[in-house]
Image (cartoon, rainbow, N blue to C red; front, side):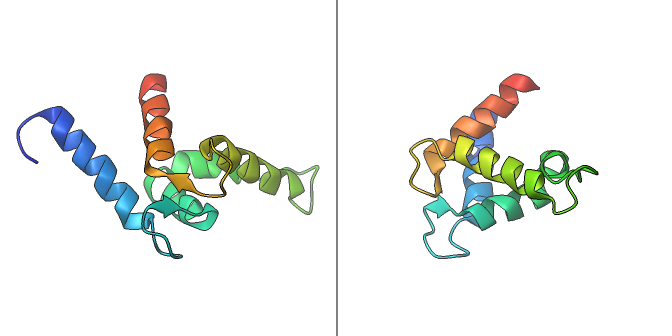
Length: 98
């Protein structure tokens, strides 16, 4: 895929998804752990927000709740994984926020 910027962007999105998908099984979806690994490596700013310690919550239950809520937001169909389609929607939403 060479040539246009859009084709290059799509190839990068696919390559990034493929890099993390399948580490725990299905190469066509991201598990919760794979999403966490991807965020730590590719978007440390979001990972830091999700994992920000709360001094009022010594057991860090709220931190886990935030991470679960974020994953559920990504997992639009509720099947427990993030498909490429759901991942692209997430990336497009991020692009609109930038």
